[in-house]
Length: 180
Image (cartoon, rainbow, N blue to C red):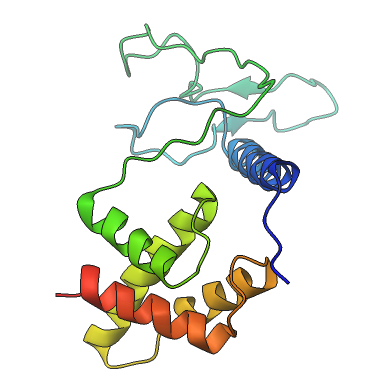
């Protein structure tokens, strides 16, 4: 029995990929500071120097002697750059990929071997696995990506064949269309 990906499954996959991308972007943004400068000409340490009175109980005042490199008073940068606001994404953009002739020939060959190549995300994965197959051939090793995508295609019902047969089809199509 052959199962096909439904629109809901594709939408769920695309939504999951979008959520993962947003979470990754948020995590990466949280790792940095609010600086938009790439470097500094200062040879001082990264933290400001502080002068504390000899007897801290008589005066609680702390004087900062090194200017903050992130303040607006410095000479670094033009001062015109500002961080922009963010906007909420309400829906994912339509998937669109520009495929070259070799990509289309590769996908057509797989389609001719009864592998469903309608899903664009799976197309991207199959093309990436094909390129990894060529690299594996150059390095004299077995591909790690081709068996993985072959198992995924079988598990998703994109082919009725065994994963080994699917992997062989991907390998042959990759070697015919990408590996030189």
